[in-house]
Image (cartoon, rainbow, N blue to C red; front, side, top):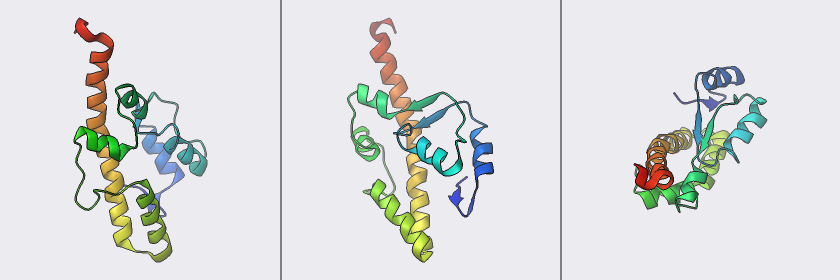
Length: 139
């Protein structure tokens, strides 16, 4: 399910969707996503356990932005989103809002969907490697 401002995204449905989960997983969400959502929608993000992958990945030696880390770990993106970064997401959103260009919106949705889907691979990598780092020879 994809929610887009002025196209089905509202405070109530976002709050309802977020209330269904037991944990939040993000990349840099503590610094960016959660504050932005709360500012735009009025503190609706529930107080749940939150794994911000940016921090355990840094402990494992992977620093930089999400796309840089994905490349280092061999996480692939589609041909249409490969090479795009956060600044491009902002550009696509502004283009859609100013012109109604559905190609910009569709590419932005694809880009954001890949961000989310790729967090699963990164979470699995973090879990496996942090477990080794913490427990080492006890495994």
